Amino acid sequence: MEMLSGAEMVVRALQDEGVEYIFGYPGGAVLHIYDALFQQDKVNHILVRHEQAATHAADGYARSTGKPGVVLVTSGPGATNAITGIATAFMDSIPMVVLSGQVRSDWIGDDAFQETDMVGLSRPIVKHSFMVRDPRQIPDMIKKAFYIASTGRPGPVLVDIPKDHTAPHNTFPYEYPKKVKMRSYAPVTRGHSGQIRKAVDELLKAKRPVIYSGGGVVQGDASEALTGVARKLNFPVTNTLMGLGAFPGTDKQFLGMLGMHGTYEANMAMHNADVILAAGARLDDRVTNDAKKFCPGAKIIHIDIDPASISKNVAAHIPIVGPVRQVLEEMLTMLDESGEPDHKSVDRWWQEIDGWRKVHGLRYETNEQGPMKPQQVVQALYKATNGEAYVSSDVGQHQMFAAQYYLYDRPRQWINSGGLGTMGFGLPAAMGVQFAHPEAVVACVTGEGSIQMNIQELSTCLQYGLPIKIININNQALGMVRQWQDMQYGGRHSQSYMESLPDFVKLAESYGHVGMKVEKLEDLDGAMEEAFALKDRLVFMDIYVDPTEHVYPMHIADGSMRDMWLSKTERT
Image: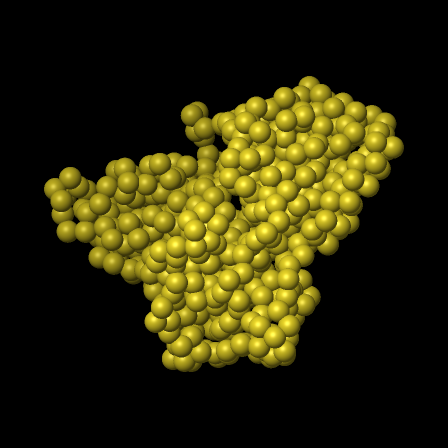
């Protein structure tokens, strides 16, 4: 049997797990591991400029591939810098394995230099955590970490490794486990057929049905099954922010996104539905508005692999615990054997929905002479990329505009921080996507507030030649904060305007990239074409938009799904 040091075991285990990239930043507690990485060429290490960016890059890699992203950080501040990215992955159920260095095992608890209780600190925001007590545990722990991260409801797993357990002079027998045995962890692999039958019977009786799919459909690779069910029944489909792309955004059955900034037709259909098939969605507050007023006349069929998510916020009439793809595939088989839905009622329902579409349909006012609108920027991006780009976003108004006006036809095409809402996510996440798909077109939609939170990663992009296109929708303000201040605080803009902004063109150029400034609508399409024609260069597009624009529709707080602002002066 091969004899390896603890550090060599870490690297060999990553190789045996098929890891392609590891995103990290070195420091004292992990230098033995970095030395082992140096002496091999199968696992590619990506040197970011901040540990938070390492987690977001691994996250973007995971979201766009379905494979766990991998992170390596040192102890103390290196590990704590990764906390925000770990929480981001946890909230959105993204598979990730984080290897954190730790001080020597005999120093733990002594407040040693760069010591932090990473296991304790991360416990609320990881799916599971391990502390290596003996180097012989490393292969087994890493195998379990990948298994836990990627099965059941996915999520981040931490492996904390004291430095002395990776020392090069101590070697141990190495064997990577072929299988994982964990008595305490047995994720469900099938939904209950009786419950699925009940759901099918209810769907066939529905007169005003809606299929409501979330991020679980994307993460569970269930898009094809979901689309099959929707096509079979001719039911309207709406996606959550995390579920965009699970059903084709250009399809006539698609109602758009639902929820706080969902379309008028999606929210109205949900409120008036008699049967809702909720697949891989959490029914969280950004969808439901006041949960007590949520869809009062609807019977809710709720599919989720995590039993804790079912009836957590809204009671399910037919709960189905199981992998969403398997459940939907079995549902489709039963539908093929069970006759037809109530076509006449569903046709009348579609007529009502089409009427709602005409009322709003994501309309917005344009300025003939004034500044361009952020919606126009996203639509120009869609046109320039033929709707085929991977699009990452940061968090704020630009995120909502990118969700509303870019039509995602594929799962894993839309990369954003939904649950935690992490500013600074967009650029490093786009890096992870570009590493995973080197030939793909990758765009990062951001704002001048968010981009500055991890702008140092422009250096990483130069080092690795990542031709990301950054679409900075610059309204010189923290746009969503300002919108809320307009609507709820009498227009008192407390600390929401961004003063002393850098010259982003010069800043991009100082990092070795191409910078472009766009201030007029008539220049927008040409600038987009020029930017995306530069296929081997990162282009930073600093695009100035109307600083007073709001995102609509918008839920009226503490109301039902039908209670919305449609513009600054219109409400339902």
